[in-house]
Image 1: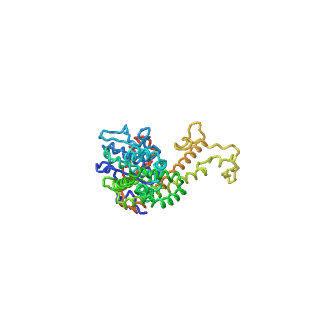
Image 2: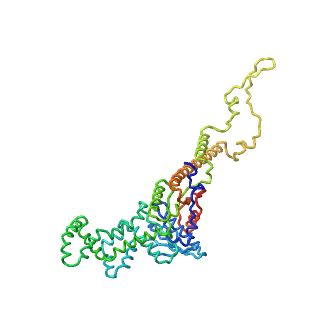
Image 3: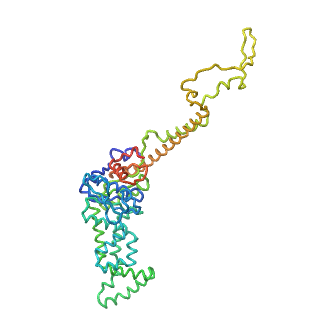
Length: 462
């Protein structure tokens, strides 16, 4: 792939997060993307950086792993925003954090829109308890409900949202509409019909059709469940329209100029494919995309050494371990004691003279300054020095292979980034270099914030 498509190229937009979070017109930042790419950490790092630059921030996480609470020094997070201590507040900023309690948020809606007796009946209804605890789309819908509540309070000038870990990036946008449609849909209206039709004539008219329908549903769902649903519907009668209305209002809030979406992805093929799909969907829904956060990008401080050269050097070191590289005992191999007869030499009278049997002693010589004889430590043998050299060569060869693997990883990551940039050259990108360990405190979040603000330069990252 041509280097002009690289995210580090000069013609590629670089996302600068500081102007984004410093702009007081930015009221909501939504971190979205597929699961496991670092959305929660990115949201927390952005919130901390914005607070330390003077904003009053609340971070709303949907991650049940409670990593956000741990990294911010809070024992636990719940449905109430809690202030984070230990931040640098010299600029006048504040940081609060909370974790969505899906059921509690649903309960708050019921309590706010129903009188005491009806609210009690709804909260105790078995079908409602199942719906509020795990109905498909409920978590995404309640996340949007909570976002609307926080925005209406006007206590914070910036809300950072960590979106639910959905299997598909589209769930976050679709689920509020789906649940709103369900609660205001045909099935609900049919179940509500007997309560809405006045007089005996109307009830008699509907009884035949309703009995047929409820009989079929009773067989499918079970009679008790159907009765629970009908009781739930009757109690929620005055509230159903509100769910759809609030879902539509929140959807418009996400489209407003004060909202900014950040798509978070890892430099991997599947994650970037999902990110590209999300970018296209946001554009189709007219939602403001600020850019792409490419998380956990690997770098190298020795990028000038290619994988091919590193592997070749490692192979050369391995080959040295097979063959004796030393000078050997040359004197012993050429001496009579080694079994090699010394050549006869001519005497002045022309007769050959057999060498005498007196042992030959080589003249004493002074070793060269850099010879093995002078480099071997006192008390060590030549075999010890050879063993040390072999161990050093093996360690060096292993390190060279590790470097080659890192360079091959960098090449794969670059190819995936190039493909994304070719498809979406208009998307601003910031790259966050991989850290050697997990983020577990405010210092780690600050480090992530610094890397977010550094732009597309992960060189030297772990």
